[in-house]
Length: 208
Image (cartoon, rainbow, N blue to C red; front, top):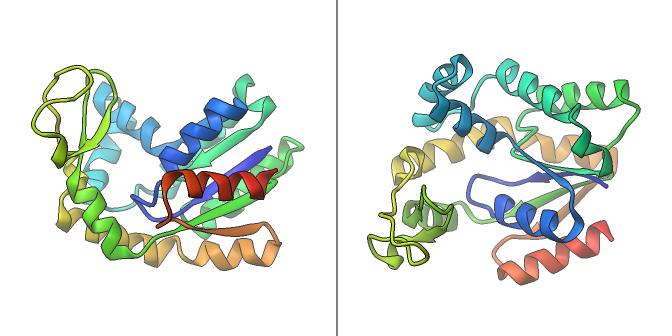
């Protein structure tokens, strides 16, 4: 099963993708994770992408498309994959279609997780992360990770101002994908303001 998860930053794509990976063993292709790893490593790609990410803007298509093309050709994607954070523009969707056609593969479903923008601003501005163990929590957890005790931190692009910029960029560049995939008959929409378990059940019902 080859799946695209669509939704604004903070809609819950990463959380749902992780559950699908755990249960179905799909390859999880998260462009956000790949970019952040490149930034942390200080690679040329990471340095190029960092200025866009810090400002809450979309990283240019050519950078993202190159990353995804390389990742799709790794053997763990043969049993199925979940694309989380890609495509974000119609140009990226067209490039993805072309790459999959060249590989004699296709998408089975595109799941759009819909959440009100103000709910997302509240979610992300409160989000806190742990670099030591990967815990994802909120400011309500206190200054330290409840799992390992390491100080929690806020991502640069999780401030309220940056989140609103990211949402604006999403609406401008990514929202047209809804129409693109609706026209292909692949689109299925899920209410992302339901509980995490309810959203997961809805996605399971879609992909079978």
